[in-house]
Image: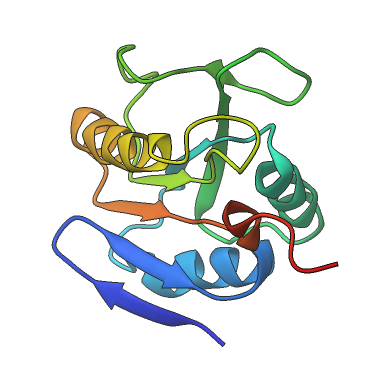
Length: 143
């Protein structure tokens, strides 16, 4: 199940998995244009990004074209981008799947990454910025 809270510049989604994210993007797509819309996907080489790439290959979201972005070049990455760099291109949406997990950095960086995704959305003209997270930010559960 998905719950979405729409604000002027941001849609926050909680739910399960990349299929739900893709479905929500399909729901929120504008219907006034038949042109393919671009979505910058940040963190495309992370766990969620890789899951979404595989899901998108099996079931593309009609009317949307993902632009896979990551901080480091890797197979399947369209643009290398990090906070502080110029927007890689214009896009109608930004999907931020990046984040810091326990043991791999300062969890407070997640706030800065969300702010950077919003700044990128403004810079590239995006009407929507979706910032997603996973349970990984909570660390390992009890053994």
